Image 1 (cartoon, each protein chain N blue to C red):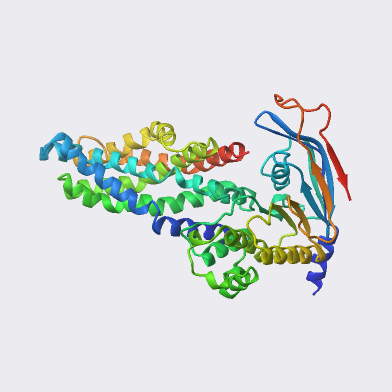
Image 2 (cartoon, rainbow over the protein chains, first blue to last red):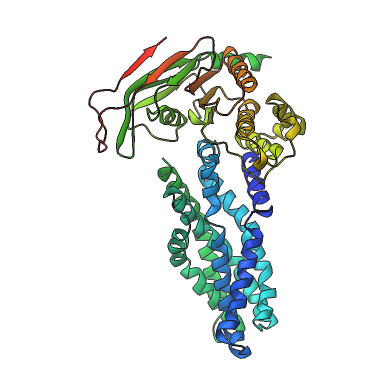
Length: 222
Length: 238
């Protein structure tokens, strides 16, 4: 456990310091969300209706932003070699890195979402529903993303490969995240059904993601 | 005392050997038919021109690439652990994070590789930095270190965590004369305490007694994952 907690502390520390992705993610989220009213016009009723969807898409894009560096940095400076050789199982190492990544980049998005929701004229219950669904759903985005991050590193390609690979896989998370939020805001549907499916998606990706990423790194790094 | 004695006995019986190893990288056969055997207290120095597969052989021992043919065996080590898990690997790159200080970088690797909490002691890390002459720079972010200082910080990791097998890829790169001499001394100490060193190098390491394994360039060129054929130029001299 010492090894994994040391890895968690290191990854968290790097992303909080200058040059890390923690603040950049929130700033990107802010930019995406503020761009939408410029595009759709100052129609408050429309913004209120599509607000949760905008917040979800903004969070989805922002959570991908720092993800491609998750293994690439460790690959470029040789740390990944030592991590692959080390005694802790690679799957647990990836869970640790994913958790550190989520705490430093996913959680700030969840915290920022109510403030950004105000820009979109959302009601308090909509802000709460968006915050809750993002809190449950963003770990799924991270755990799906680690597979893409591992693949991008193994293929030695950065940049656009990761979003192209990962975004289609995040569609279910987006659908049920927004569905749950809309049910709470607009009514007309059940809130708990999509929310339960969202929880299931997070748990599933938490199991499958680390194994898939570990397999990718093991066979891809040779 | 008894435990320490048992530990020494275990290391003394250690023997690392490779049998008829072949390596294929990117469809090209780098080497084949390479065998070696290093006992505890012995050093194996890999030499040969660029591209002969020195680094590939080290990475193969570390378990980072799989041999296309042949096998690597370790006698007398911990049977629960792979060769890589009992080895230190110092590659071309220095695994340091520029955003973290010198102390934080060393403390991370000491904790991650050791897996125990005794390395949490600040004095332990300080001693580790002193051993490579970096104690004065302890609070400097590693991004400001020179190439030689980065290499010394990598070697501090090797000294901080006891492992019986050292796999060193061009360990003297960027080191000044004093640091090279210091490296020679710590390698010699490691060997005399029953450790084992496999090093790839172009320059002399200055070890008193070392086996040399010279890798040559495979002449066959491109090969589509077919293994076999004549071995490449290879001679072992004592």
